[in-house]
Every structure is written in structure tokens, then in C-alpha cells.
Image (tube, rainbow, N blue to C red; front, side, top):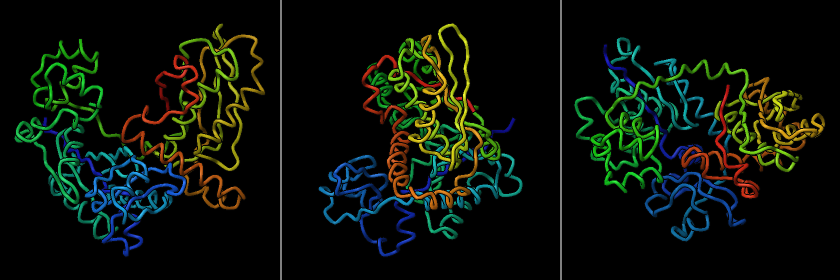
Length: 407
């Protein structure tokens, strides 16, 4: 059976590149996209290559970035533009495959196995996409080409900007194995530190390690990472149309202890709503309704729903309605065992933008959206635990869980 051909496409310095594309006078300047510099708590969401030469990195404070580069041009976010360009790039992808799995606005996996007879091999397709993105949209992209998703992602990171990298069965031992183990997808800082503790510093050393020893160190993820390092990954690339046809997006949590008060419920509902909102924005959808699922300690289930006008993808608004449903419909005769929040009646975000502008609260909504988008960026890059609400520290046991997603 022939190998698959998987691409991972990563738009270079995406937010900053869109800002420079829309304002060419910034092209020869160090540029960072961020929040309110005067408030002294804004962070860098993206930096162009000139800014990166000064050591400026995503997620550092604007104040710190300014110290490194006094001439840094800091521009505010324009998420409507980022979404518009992201959709335009995906339309290019769709000319080559329907198997497109976005990881964020600027990254996506593509399975072009079935397109090779029409458009050429993986490298040819990747180079064609890279050229079209540059010529049609004025942006650059780095693309990794391989026989699985893990190595394709490594390829897009290997050479930047504006490049195509091939990791094949013939060259991956030479090109992939010498890389730091932390470059491998799903190996975070904590996992890399554990591996370093047993002398594993490169992907090749991970590939040569004993899977049983890795399982003792990392649990079930140990043998999985061993497979990944050896090029064994059959994870499919999802069909893009299926993502757009989602009817609802929700999370449900069985809490580690009984939920006895509205304050306890808040600790559970906030992470639920933030996760649902993050996924709504990733899908480019807004929720026209929110449903609250409640199961008490006697396993009796209660479900309540309300409509949202206008539709939203903000965690703050999902939380407001979920909290309201709980207050109106649950009498606290028994503690709660499980809570769930589901966003339903989904509509494309660009179809509700006019309603938001006419609502009279656009400025306030825009402020909250900028905050939540900044959180999205940090979580996409550094994991879901990168940013957490201070209220979650009030009861670490109750708030320190991992949500179980369901679509």
C-alpha cells in the first residue's frame, strides 16, 4: 500500500504579515501585533522577521518588546482581517483536496494523496500552493511534506519563511532524528524535561528508546511518542466540509468532588465556556443557543436551553447565560455531579457581523473579543493550561480537571 502524502501549511508571522500586507509602509520596519501598550499589560501576538531579529517573541509583554527594540511598531489586532485571509488561503487549499484540518487560523494539515495524479507529487503541490498564496494574497507560507502528520508538522517548522521541506522515508533518519526531542509534536517542556532525565535529548534517541521504559515514565503517551519518532502515525486528516457542518460544540465535566454551591459551579462553568468559545472561533462559528446539562449525585439529569440574540462566540456571554440557566432552573436540593455546556444553532460568524455592529455594544464586545483571542493564541501555541483564570486557584481540586470534548 502506497504512503499517504500529508502537508502541514503554516502561514509565516500571520497576524503581522496581514498587517504589513494591508499597510505596505510597515514592510521595512520591525512590527509586532499586540494589545494596549499604554496599559502595560498587552502581549505580543505576532512579530515579523525584523522584530524577531531583536529577540522579540510571541507572548512576551509589549513593554519587554519595546525595551528590546525602541523603534518597534506596535499595531492593534484586526481579527476580522485575519479570519478573511485565513478563509482565502483555505479556498486555495480546497483546489487540491477536501481533506483539510485547520489547527488554528494560520495552520492546517492537508491530505493530498488522492490529488497526486492530477497535480503532481507532494512537493509539486506544496510549491504550487506556496506560490499561489504569495502571488494571490501577498503572504508567505512554509509547508512540510511527509507520509504522516507528525513529520509534516516538523517539516513546516524546519525552514522558514517561504519554504517547502520534504521528510520522506528515505531521509527522515538523517533530517528528523538529530532534531531536539522538544520539536516533536505533543512533546511539551515538561515531557522534554522528563525525557532529558533519562538521557533522551533528540528525536533519534527517543526512536531508539525502550517503549516499555517510556511507558513507565510517561504512561500511555510514552509508546505513542516512540511510534511518532519512528514515523509511525496513521492519524487521518479530517474532511473540511465535516468541520463546517458541526451542529453543536460542547464540553461536559464530571467534577472531582461534589458541586455544592453556585460559587462551586462557577469554577466549573468558566473553563467549560472558555473551551467551547475557543472552539467556536476556531470553526469560525457563532452560537445561536446555549444548553446547560446538569446531573446531580443521584444521577438525575436536567437539561435547559436558551436562545442567544445576537449569536456569540464569546466565553463571557456563554458564561452569563449558562449561569442564568443554572440560577433559574436548579434548586440545589442535591449537590451536582456533572455539568455540561453546549453551543447550538451554529451560524457562520461572518453572517452575524452586521447584527453585532448594530447592537449598540460593539465596542465593549470588541474589547472582550481581543482578550479572548489573545488567550486563544497562547493556548494554541503553549497548551490549554497556558492561561487560566485567577478564580480557578480558589479550589485547584475542583478546577484542575481536563474537559472531555464532544461535537
